[in-house]
Amino acid sequence: MIFSRANFRRISTLKQIMEAKIAESRQRLTKLKKDHGNVPIDQVTIDQVVRGMRGMKALLTETSRLDPFKGITFRGLSIPECQQRLHGKYREPMPESMYWLLLTGEVPTFDQVEELRGELAKRSQIPAHTLDLLNSLPKHMHPMTQLSMGVLSLGAESEFMKAYDAGVKKSEYWISTLEDSLSLVAKLPGMAAIIYNNVYKDGKTCDPSIKYDLSENFGRMLGFSDNNFFELMRLYLTIHCDHEGGNVSSHTTHLVGSALSDVYKAYSAGLNGLAGPLHGLANQECLKWLLELWKVVGDNAEEDSIAVYVKETLKNGKVVPGYGHAVLRVTDPRFLVQMEFAKKSIDDCPLCKIVALCYKVIPRVLKEHGKAQNPYPNVDAHSGALLYYYGLREFEFYTVLFGVSRALGCTASTIWDRALMLPIERPASMTMEGLEEFAAKE
Ligand code: AMX
Image: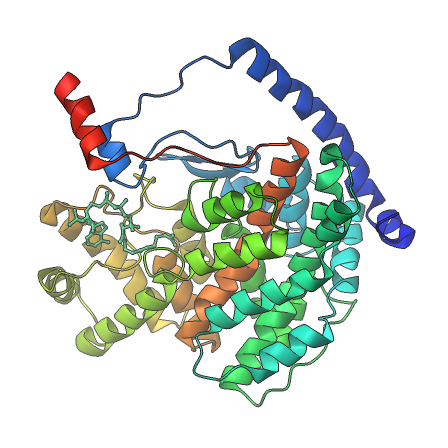
């Protein structure tokens, strides 16, 4: 036996539901491969090869689906539907409920959420070697680098690697990957809080409590006590959790995991991708840009002064952070839900008012500029303003919050990759000469 029986008993309902779903999905996939394996989905163009595989349908991801015009759905549920069905006893959806949904495809009952909440709370203790590592890192090291290193160090306890070394069957790889994933998701808020308190505060982090949900524990470990901030954390950690399989963090996690690296190695790599300014780091860049804009236009900003500032950004050859998207062609529903949160919960946030004004002005300016395929705001255009309002003002930490959330989607997908026994990822690359030969044939 690779894991303790006690652990298995604790996650038995989750595991049993997943077992049934996996058996059914394996049958569907076998049929697809056998009966329809040769059906073409798409034609790959030279443009797609040289433009970052944009829109190329080449990945199987079960947890969420991104429609350019409707935005994200998690196992078929839109963000407003998740708000209605995943909130448990709170106002905003719970990340625990979302994780259950991503893992099983089902909306959990109250008892199931409670089971998962308790399970995660029990697994939240951080091993001594990871604590020592985090406490030894220099304050000037970017928090995302620290988080990625911390996650990698958790791999010393990987149940998957133990199972693999013990010769467990391929069809059971998902079970130890589920074990690792639950432990990773459980430990991430504490690790993030330790990094925050080490870098920006007095280095002291309180322990999580079994009494609270993941979001309240996280908020408290970061030093907050405001219930509205905990609600914001619930919303934030839920809406950032997954964005189908092709984005940099999810795709990287999938790619590394496809070589059967444990989920700690795979997600640590995913975090390094999330730390790029065109991906998760955009939230940090976005708030920096907004604060500079605020300084210039003041509290009583008007549309014209914002337009002048945006045009200046573009004239300097910079992108407007928080705007545009590789897939979406409408306003990101994750932006809209944060704007709603601001309207509902906050009436005295000048920065949120500027964000709302920007939403009126920037799409028009970007359309006139004529380059961006999507001139509308993405998730990052609002998140920084809300965090700033509640007093979380250390921008370099913002992508860490994103990283705590994205673990839900990336680990759930890695478990399903193993459940469906997907092979190592190995596409083919082309030389320029090879592409020219194709072009000449046309
Ligand atoms: N401001 C100015 N120019 C923009 C722009 C923006 N917000 N968004 C796109 N463009 C430009 C691109 O730089 C590109 O210019 P180029 O031809 O000179 O290279 C051109 O418009 C076409 O780009 P695109 O096809 O519309 O976008 P993309 O798929 O190449 O890139 C993204 C998508 C998000 C990287 C891009 O829109 C961008 O840089 N946005 C600002 C950064 C940002 O908000 N990132 C967060 C994304 C969400 C996330 O992952 N967290």
